Length: 530
Image (cartoon, rainbow, N blue to C red):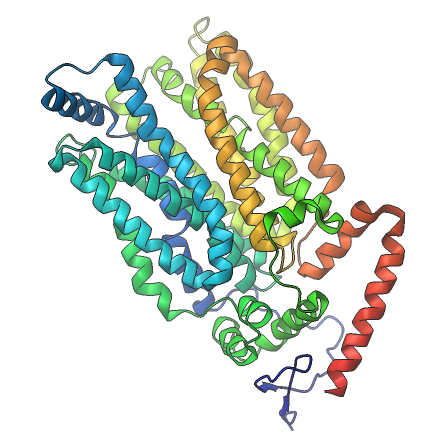
């Protein structure tokens, strides 16, 4: 006979809604209730959050490159008609720099806002509200040309930067919280898959045969509203994050309904118990502020790890690769007109490696992929240093450089490009996770802006030897990860926190662990008595 259902109440003296539970049944050794594939609802929910999340970031980073010359002409014509004098070349460079870099400033503001929005509005609510910013930004950029106001273009780029900053913060939060632990790595790779998909889509749409021509560039920039409308249409059909509903809101009934929809009726109970354990461990702790994490010894090494990985991702040399790509393609004999089509290959490489990493991450593990990625990037930095030094000496050397560029991009996608966001979600428990993403987002955007400002000087000063700097950076980050970060595959958030206790508390870790076990036993007894 099937086990008889019973109604159980949870909570510490609070009036809560009863949820339907099944009596625990002992599992045979070696048996598993895990499905190797996500349910269709879970898969489509990941797609719904991705299209208006990191897809927007990748898309808007990519599309600004195609209309560069057309925007220069627009700035010149607008300035001449407004002030009846030609625009000074240095001022033109300054205005273009503002249009390009204001996106990073908006991204920093969005990252600082994203965690708070995810707490106040929920993960789903924050993403839906974020689309309003994207639509407003698209309108401003679209009407800048017909109105002759380049200031609207600057304002639109700032707003779409805010949208991207919020999306890249909240989307990994949602995915990390809805995915079961045995699929969490692959599901979390949705962040990178949609980001690289956005870059590739932007490269394709930005071709001069499509929207990259002189007449259509305002439409190209305003096309950011399409992913926003798509998310507004599809995301409301999917549930809020179950962890947010139970731990932050205390809504057991909605949490159970969300889990059943996302994981199916047979397998939701194990996820429910995992969330309950984390809820009891938090003991009513409220979501924390970013500055509180810096003073908390219990998350010290998790925070250091996230900062090192985020800076390592941005400073790894991937920007140098794209900078040298055009020059290397020209040296290989590819005409200037055909280079944009070859550049599509770099975007396709990133997208392909993100998909591959998503398939491998839950089999191979996080440590192997990210350490391997950084070590491969170290090797290809050596190859590029030599090949660029002898670029014009032998006719075959440009092809070696070309192959090394694609290999570097593949290594980046398999390692730091995909794993960094996944680990950020896994290293923190519910109360600290939004604040951790705010810190990681701020570090990422500041690093992105800094490398954008300093990179031209690094290249002009060191030429091809700039890759020696990236070689040292990649090898150092790989060594740090090897010695500090444990494997997180198939582990719950509480189990991962336990792994860091020894680093955070040293000799006192055993005593603290014993106290936590005693506390957990008391909580289990309280739960059983209720």
